[in-house]
Figure 1 (tube, rainbow, N blue to C red):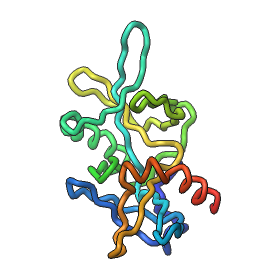
Figure 2 (cartoon, rainbow, N blue to C red; figure 1 turned 180 degrees about the horizontal axis):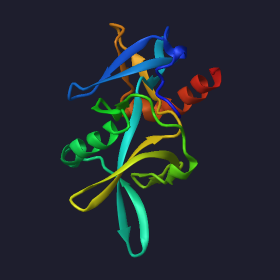
Figure 3 (cartoon, one colour; figure 1 turned 90 degrees about the vertical axis):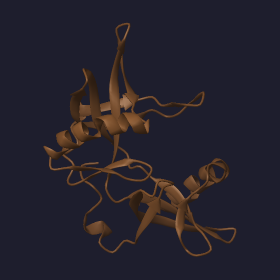
Figure 4 (cartoon, one colour; figure 1 turned 135 degrees about the vertical axis):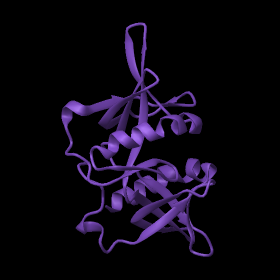
Length: 187
């Protein structure tokens, strides 16, 4: 992912806005659309680069990156992270469901790619690759600002009024594997 998806490919693409429970918004392009059992489902790609902030954790000679997810911790480091990214002409935004960066990402540098194994509720997921965009310190803790190498995609559906929202947790568990197969195979 060498640039945000603001390219000629998306000039005519439909943009939808996802909103979280806090009222934050995330503009997304509709990548794919699928009709299933009378409902319309969508594969959505954020308009701007998704951002994840990790803290470097060194314990017993093992160094690992730990995702910063708590709102209070993000609040505490947001100004520093924003300042560091602004040096690269990127604007850090508090958007729905993920932080995002507006602007042109630097070219992919293989020396700045890290692989992170993600554990979610006793379930080990596929390792993900992230490009480190910047590092900074806050209160003697080192942080890394990263963007996923593979696109971050969301699954949504249209309600009766035509508004698109993310699948509920229960719907995602039931439908996501089937939707992934159908929507990703179409591309």
